[in-house]
Image (cartoon, rainbow, N blue to C red):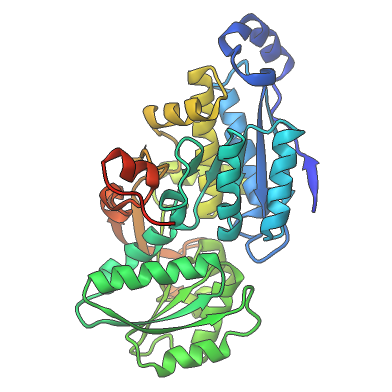
Amino acid sequence: MRTGLNRAGLVPALALAAGLATAPAHAEISGGRVKVGVLTDMSGVYSDITGKGSVTAAQMAIDDCLKAECAGMTIEMISADHQNKADIASATARKWIDIDGVDVLADMSNASIQLAIAPLVKEKNRVALFPGGTARLTGDACQPGHVVQWMWDTYVQVAGIANRLTQPGTSWYLVTADYALGHQLEADTKAVVGARGGKVLGSVRHPFPAVDLSSPLLTAQGSGADIIALANAGNDTVSGIKTAREFGIMGSKQKLVAFFLTALDVKSVGLPTAQGTLLSEGFYWDLDEGTRAFSERFKAQNGKIPSAIHAGVYSSVLHYLKAVAAAKSDDATTVVKTMAELPIKDDVVRNAHLREDGRMVHDFYVFEVKAPEASKGEWDLYKLVATLPGDTAFRPLADSTCPAVTAARGAPKPAN
């Protein structure tokens, strides 16, 4: 495990002097400073779409807030590698909270880790900002006032594309990572496809991380399903697309869907291999002037365009810090309440608001990977197929299984 103090978002000398004059305005911020902890995958299967890029994104958010709403505040950041292990993540988070005084944790893009951290931040009265992950974080495992889920979840990653592709009788087959993220993607697929009159013929699970996806994909191909879906992420998805192309699935009558494919993954695979793959994402660098401006700034520091997770870390940390400044407090429930009250406005998300279950709802998108001849540049990778309003893309609040939400509306709490 690597834990270290990164470049702190500390206020320059002139701003410190100004901060002394305005100190009473932030008197309820414990210790006189806000501390952000980025708990991420620095070396594993998700390191390309999280890792150092998430640290860069969080620092960008700190720097941007210090130039505006957070002027006069002291903000620090630390980071660590969770190694995709829930026990290491939990131990690090406890140390950060109990010893290092961390107020808010960001990233943690691994479903098993997320489910371990959620009850911890409630116990310790801290905030966790998850840029994505299992839909259980705003369902049965929700912790309103402490857990905020920003860019995506397993439900919207599935629903965004399954609702578009599924007609009565459409058949699906899943290649699933055998851990919490894959299991939830599989469960959400069965629910969404079934509701549309389609059918899931079956699924085959592979170890996480995968070594060889040949056998699972041959099984999926042999099922005769109309759609083969990769219910995995990171390097497992990259491997799945390469293998699908090798086996002739791409370009056949069967469609290949990747539930969690990023632009960085597509760049790694290459357009000749990934072309035609369908996916849904909550962020793409080339959507509009705002996303392009943020992405250029990020690329200048990190060498690559941002993933949706990087964008989510930036947007969520920035909005959290704005809420701390507005509330003049770092108390967890106070800050999250203020996050829900403040308009969400940045270069990353569109038409966004924070619900009472901790879900940030915003526009979502369906993309198709471009053919090489259609690409006009190194990172020109996607064709926009559809823009989905957040209130229709994400699981409706009326269908929530979050105990606090169901209790508030007078429904019985779901069984444990």
